Length: 269
Ligand code: ACO
Image (cartoon, rainbow, N blue to C red):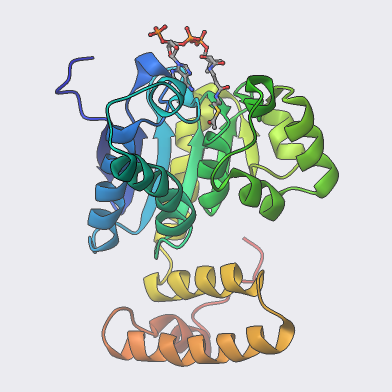
């Protein structure tokens, strides 16, 4: 890989955009260039009406080997201020930009996923893994702790016993185990991973964009709200949905179709 190689690749499959971490020779470890490129990519895709669903994956044999240990923990010539900025960006693009991204996101875990790569999986709404992918909260083996957003991600998605067992031992595990503990939705054979993920992405992309956005927001905030706050938030979001649809962001044909008996989503296929 030359210095001109983009650290992130972007490819469209109709309404689905595939974003690929592109440092295969470093197992897609997250360095400054990759982090900045992910921030730019997500900011661009947020405003791109042609993009309805984002799939994030890794080039080569790894999904993401976590933070770039050499760049983040080695010495470098950054000033204290630029180093602090980088550390902030490294966390924020995952827990804020990606987690609150206004369109559905799917992590397609094609191979190794370690350390900081966990929060990338958790901050996506859904995750499909190669059943042979290797996962590990390996920080403890470096005499370190799951850094940045990783602890919160684990607390959000895993049962306490599973999260602590993985974090305290650093034991690696495979995609099938990741599915059993709920870290990913499904683990499939490697040769079916892309087709399987794209089928899911297209299924979701066909839904109403505004309803998808607000479904995701209501769910994400409900996990952090009590019942009363969540019901009030949901009521406000229902009005927001009407306003967005009236604004032309999407139409309510589906409800009209349902009323007219043309649409019955619960009917057997
Ligand atoms: N940071 C920096 N470089 C990395 C990282 C990383 N996290 N992971 C891999 N690399 C580099 C290796 O140093 C090597 O570079 P080199 O060719 O310049 O020596 C290259 O990627 C290939 O790595 P290999 O180990 O040869 O690849 P392999 O396919 O055999 O193994 C694996 C891949 C399992 C991901 C292994 O590299 C590994 O265990 N990496 C560390 C993963 C980890 O524990 N990450 C957590 C970091 S802690 C955190 O995120 C806070």
